[in-house]
Length: 113
Length: 116
Image 1: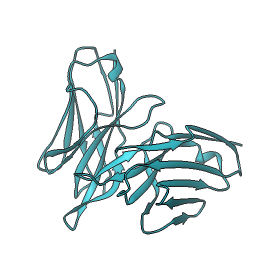
Image 2: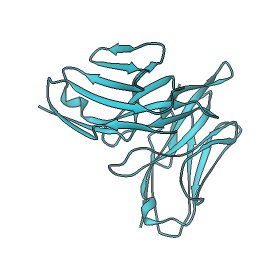
Image 3: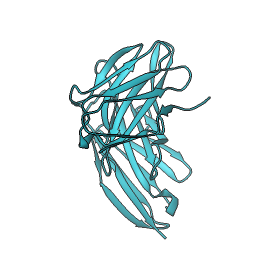
């Protein structure tokens, strides 16, 4: 089916703490998993993505892990800063018919100074 | 390359009217998707066009329609506007490489529609 579940819906952390957002997908054929960050009043922007042939990918303070067996993937942000405050969306490619990107419901991250 | 552009950026309409929004994808991108985003809500998928044909469709009523032109620019139309149609409408484009639509999607700035 077409489903990407994302948790939590809101996340509040103190500056310097780590934040983890988790997503679960339903299509076992999914092979591409991007993460988008949407700051208030702005467009969603791609921050990191991972393909199914790797289990982890890092880019400075952000990392994504993928567990294909369990069909879930997670975004990890270390040493959070106030500018990390935004809504984060995960997504997965649905490979039935014309390839389609299915988004999770979003996580509002608030980093307090 | 210029990014995805959308016009107009802001629009105010009244109930019962119809509206047309425009999206120009990144140069060379052939796929255009449309999303509705209401305050505090996620990205609700409307439809996706590729090579002037609708390829994917979300669960929206028939009042929402779209089309794509030969230059890949896309328009979406909402007829008989309702108050609940007030939202940010985002479009996104994907590239074509090696005959395949690439997975990575890039968003435009959105058109903010207010229905009074």
